[in-house]
Each structure stands twice: as structure tokens, then as C-alpha cells.
Amino acid sequence: MSGLLALLDDVAGIAKVAAASVDDVTAQAVKASTKAAGVVIDDAAVTPKYVTGLDPARELPIIWKITRGSIFNKIVILLPAALLLSAIAPWVITPLLMLGGAYLCFEGAEKVVHWVAPGASHAVEEDLSIRDPAHLEETRVRGAIKTDFILSAEIMTIILNEIPTGGSVWFQGVALGLAGLVITAVVYGSVALIVKMDDVGLSLSRYGRLQVTRSVGRGLVRGMPGFLMVLGTVGTLAMLWVGGAIILHGLEVTQWWPQPYELIHDVAKYAAEVVGQAKGLIAWAVQALLDGIVGLFIGIALIPIGTKVIGPMFGANSH
Image (cartoon, rainbow, N blue to C red):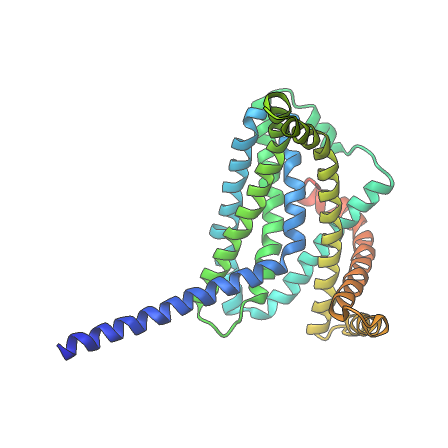
């Protein structure tokens, strides 16, 4: 009997350790996921364009195709590659992170330039020239998955950089995979709601039994274009902020050029002391603003390289 009790006690101990490990993995995955917020917002802001102009009945199937492609990108390709790099060449992670940050700066700056000097791109004209709906859908899905791969690579690198290196490969892999799946669910679940919201609004405005219901429906229909514009703007600003912050922090970590990061940190701290209220919020806002300005200048400097060299080399379509 005592042996059985001892065995049960051991099992209970193992269960507690396993439960604690699951809690640690989940907590680490959530914490790491928040660091990728800027890229996630942009991903959610970008994706709705891929169903624009197509049959509304195909919107959700297209988003599901893109979601499956995103999961494949993150779990099958990027997760093993990230773990391999972390195991054999961890020093590469920060430069890769900075490279991804440069891409974010480029994308954000390109959108800002487009706001200032709008014009149709060759890629858009080529897309509009496709008359076959099935071919157009296939082209859109391929383009979305290609864009998702780039954004997912940056997301997974950011997450990996936030996961403690002292843990086991199992811990890192599960935390990284869980964070990737959570982000994918959040992004494409949000996109599905966004692209169908106008249909929901139209249905409420037509068939709502109450006047207030019909008013809400009309408000949704009228408000969605503005909401998408705001979402896209927030996504662009977030890309510049995150991209600039990643590069500046990388320069400080590698000690290649730590002075800009230290200067911005000191300015933000000084601003918080001057205001005297909500010091943490003020310091964060000032640092984010300055990181974003740096990101914008970096991105503008990279536009000629991205559009004239890298884009044609890889056949990438900017979004």
C-alpha cells in the first residue's frame, strides 16, 4: 500500500512539473507574441486587400487558404529553421532581426511615400488585368502567402529573440510554435471578421427588426472603409516604430553603434521626468516616436535598393 501511495505521489509530482512547464510555455508564448505587435497589426491591415473585388462568397475560403499557408510558413519552414539557428549560430539572430527590421522600415516608408505621392503601381495594374476569377484568386493567394512568409519570418525571429535561451529545445520549440499559431489565429480571425463586417452590416440594415439594429447595420457599412484606412495607418506607423526600434536595439546589443539607442533612451527618460506624470507612458511614447522617425529615415534610404534591386531580384510584390 505504501508503495502505491509513493507511486501516486511521484505521479502527482510529475503532473505538477508538467503543468508548471505548460504554464511557463504559455506565458512565454504570450509575452513573446506581444513583442511582434507592430508586424501583426500590419499583417491584419494588409490581408483584406487580397479579397477586394472578388465574389463575396469566396472571401472566407480565400482567407482560409492564406491561413493554411501562413501556418505552413511558420510551423513547417520557419520554426525548424529558427531552432536550428538558435542551436548552432545564436549570434546570427540579432543581425537577422535587424535585417527584418530594415524590411519593416522599407515597407512603412514606402507606404508613407505613397500617401504623399499616390500612384498606381505596375503590380496593381497587372493584378487588375486578370479577368479569370479563378486565376485572380490563385494569384492573390500566392501573393498573400509570399507576403506572409516575409512577415512571419520577422514575427518568428522577434518571438525567438524573446524566449530564454537557457531552456530546452522542447521549451523553445513549443513556445515558438504556440506563439506562431496564436498570432496566426488572431490575424486571420480578425481579417475574416473585418472582410465580412460590411455584409453583416448590410444584413442588419435590411432585415433588422428594430430601428436601432438597422441603424447599427448602416453604421457598419458606412464605417468600414474608414476603419480599414485607420487600421492601415496604424499598421504603417507600427511598422516604422518596430523596425526602427529593432535596428537601434540591435546596434546597441552588438555594440556596432550603441550611441543612437542610448541617446533616444536618455531623451525619453528626460521627457518623462520633465512632464512628471505617467512617467512610464511618456517615456514609452517619446521613445516610440523617435524610433519611428529613425525607422522612417532608414526606410526612405532603403526604397531605391528595395524597388530597383531586391524587388526585381526576387519578384516580390510590395504591399
